[in-house]
Length: 499
Image (cartoon, rainbow, N blue to C red):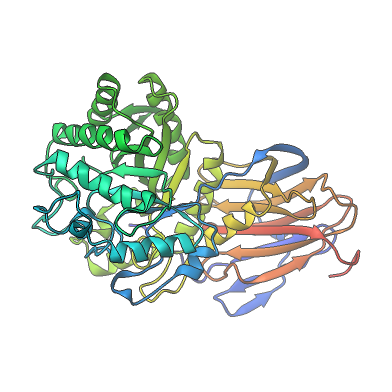
């Protein structure tokens, strides 16, 4: 069983070209000078060339869940806003007792008339979406219901009247996009029909055909009234398998796209999920799903990876209710600790080259799987997202070499004004070799100051130290013991040769 990495590890070693200023933190107590050249690990050379632009870094760090915590006890709006989140998927909001977003709370009386404003209770969902928008993020509205882990399933059922259910969907969209029922003009683009209908009975008690019929009825009905919005699904938790690197879709996924093509049903985006311990699996699946959509005739359909996270040991069992409490605690701590942070940063870097259009980490709220403790304190995964947001602050991507897919991720970017650059390295797993980080062709003539931040079990993003590498052959050498992240911001030195 995977366990949280020992707090006794040597956190990191740094050496700048021409002079060694190495810091070791041992058991979080003692700092000692320890030159990297004494390490016996293999060396890995990572190189960045700032004269070779390769496009723009993509903001793929969306999340699930907005900043208002269930019961109104906490609000993490400021902390979410600091991440520059592009999209927030509205799913499992207020879980495990949702009071927002879900159909049964917005339209509480199934016998009511969906054409009447008084049939709806939008109040708490209005507040929730307003908070999402305050973070600067764009909502993605999941129509339907949240997951139910209880023995008795109250809402995870096929609607008895699918036409009426579709009419309720139209009422919700009308309220948030057209101002209906004292509503808004939020212009929410993405509307998703249900979540994980193959995940039974937690998310759906019906059959495959029941979901295909619901999607067909709802998508056609919604698109007729709102042709400008994007309709999609089916938010598959199990989309298919990877066999020797080749994606094999499930029968459900295949039947879904066949139905959409055959019946001319709108499919503006295809949504899918992935929980794994290997960042490269996510990118490989993205490639496979893109090809799957192209082969099915959906060349223009977007691919939305709208749930993903680190799965310790690639197993759900330690986190299940059947597991021992100590094992379950360790599993969750690994997911939200340094291992989960390194995985998240590596995934976001590797996704830069993957054919995914929108991605949403699960999730950006408090508690298990999230970025905050149950008391609202940011954890290591939140710091990983801070580091990635920092990379995006220098959005012009440049050529890099030396990364090891699934183990060691590396990306670099340059600010448009040419006065700042960022290097982001994430060590997920492996022997933690000595990394020799080289760069060339920065656009300023002055000496360079490197601001270095390390995220691991004992150090966080807010701790910064600086180096001034040799100007002729700029290099930093460090041992980044996995799991860990190195964030390096390069700037012109205020005074050449000064700290």
